Length: 244
Image (cartoon, rainbow, N blue to C red; front, side, top):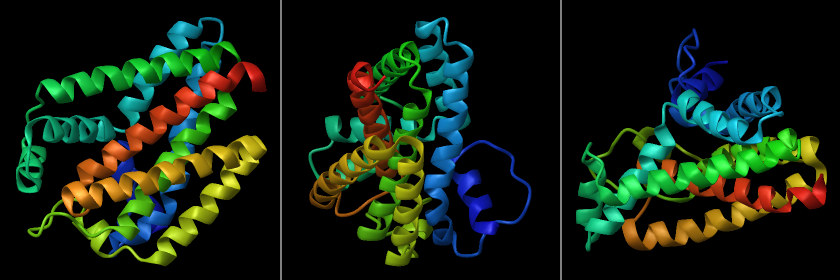
């Protein structure tokens, strides 16, 4: 159970008892399961407030940010600041290490959370709580894909370096199988399509990260999570009248 404990401790604020796995990358196959855990809690909030869709969307979004400690949102902000203020790869990596959030990061956070809240509200209004879970699973699977397929971008190492440096193809295979099984079990063909969309977007992000940063960092993993999670939530919210 140590890899699962590490995955929960890394991606959420849940105080899980037990000992972390010695090889942190062994936690990667459990990232989709953590996505299922987070998504289920978010869907539960939506369900409880189904009579008030707007409030359901806002409180479900707040729940998602709270339970993940704002980890992924922080990554999105750092990457946005880096892109807005850095012209070279070295400068962008330097900006991402700055603990302060600039104008570009603030704008990215506001846009991301507004879109996520609106999407969750739309899904709540159409009672699509189960469908809302899938993006949380796919976005964590995307992190595994990047960790396995890209080197760590900082030569001096960093917080996510041990996950990335020790990641192996088997970790992605296991995460992919888990994600596919859960997505199909939750929403059938729609779940499969969402997973496929997420993985295609991840491939595009991988190409971009390799060119602009020379690899991946913890902030880039977090930003990827937000882009895919919010993007897929917006897509399923758009199609929710057709599938409800």
